[in-house]
Length: 322
Image (cartoon, rainbow, N blue to C red; front, side, top):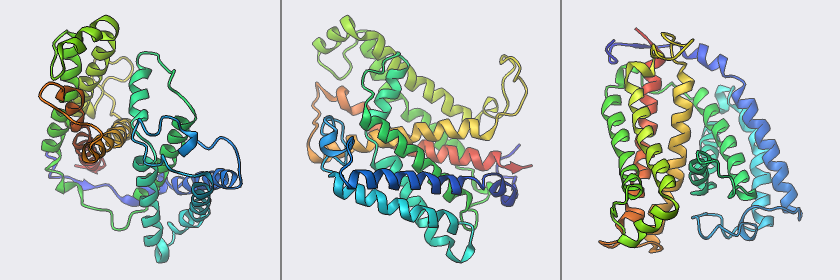
């Protein structure tokens, strides 16, 4: 099927199916506001600022946050969330509610979290949870809220955006996302094999003694991510292959591809934006002998952005009928 010769599925059916998203975002905002009010009035357990001892090491943008001020902002946003969620279903006031929703999505998914999200995601594959703490749990809580607000804004968007006939760029941007997944993976796999790619010789030797399996795992995750990204333009990304028991020949649910891809993109954008910030502020520098320590990670931000575009193209194609 030519992806430029499809017509969009009726948006009304999809919007009705996901009508619970906006109320869920409003309820989440209520909890967010209550937690903020608790901290604003002196509650314990504030996970930002002084309550986050690793904030300065991991690129937290909220390292200077104070419980009173941050809690008051959270309480205000929580109070606004309920009316904004209700306004999405009313055409007369939909636009300001959509602006609020998208701002909440970006703030909660990109601004609040830092590199600890992707760091601990990678460590999960090795069974390591020793770095889990209150600040990380708060970040994940915020990511859930941001995802709800983003989904609500998308479900109630005005117009409906470009139709499926305009996704001819989906294939090249998907290839781009897959290629951008490789620099970090290649460097990590090289270290695991004892090849000092972009790092001093002694660095690789230390890794061989204690962490070669970690490097191989992290590099393998990037390579696997590149392969899975290609699934956004392959038949096996739309129909389960024959070698998968019970599911062979069935259509792949759209959400099963879109949700993991967007989660991966969010983590890449979170971490990648921090690396560029460190570059601008001079907190990290690269030389001819040490570029491998941070250089490959500079592909994370463009990788995440390209993955968002590739996922969007996949969504448009899959939500269309021949």
